[in-house]
Image (cartoon, rainbow, N blue to C red; front, side, top):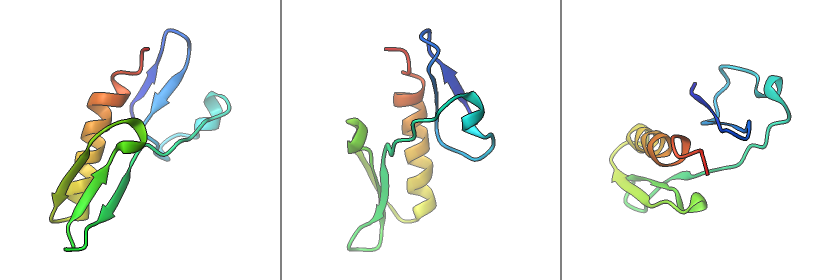
Length: 82
């Protein structure tokens, strides 16, 4: 689990249960995206909730989840500093 701490002391991460986030303070957990099936049975990762693109379609849900995490790391987590 990657934690990014901004110069303002704000901690950002992609949610996981590897650590208890409340140990760092009161967490504010917000959904960043949705991975949903298409009518054709493929999978897309929709990052519109944070102003991102829709990724896919992918043949497997695990592919869409991996693309979602990669995009979030590159464009949201690593861009944590305002």
